[in-house]
Picture (cartoon, rainbow, N blue to C red):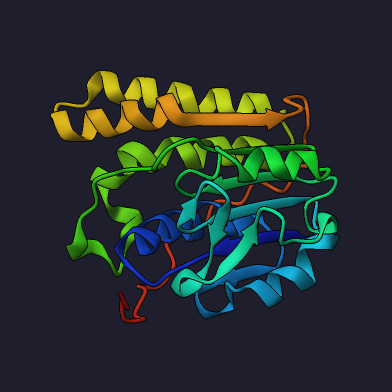
Length: 222
């Protein structure tokens, strides 16, 4: 079964998080990658029903997961259940763990991982073209990447969440910057899983590219 990887890329936060996913997750996943201008409702509707896993990164609200330029990808009460039925879903987006994640499980998703409040981190705007090299952002986003890779290894969804939580704890313990440490701890507190923690997907090959992607050259549009 294909995967759906939905990534917005139109402001600094989405550029930062998408960069990490492009570097460390995308090489392991088959199409479809809905990146940048492709990250909209219609392409998602077309490809999601065939997928076994959905990994999404964008801005969120309690009942909405957003795509490129604040377009709505998923909204409570406004999507077809076949888009989420029988899937493992991970949303790196603010507040989707309040209403949207449990709603997707109620509509047949095996499980949905998200956050019950905002997802916050510190990032370096000077590294917007090569966001995967941002060590400040890595303090928060690194554990997310580790958790997603556990999913792609074919392990249980609960293990993926536990891996992410452990990564936050380790990073917080060694972090000297008080602001970054507070972000790590905040994200750890708000990471949630709904549905079956034993749910897993078909394992994907472990692929580690020796070189990062080329610099992202699309302009940032607020």
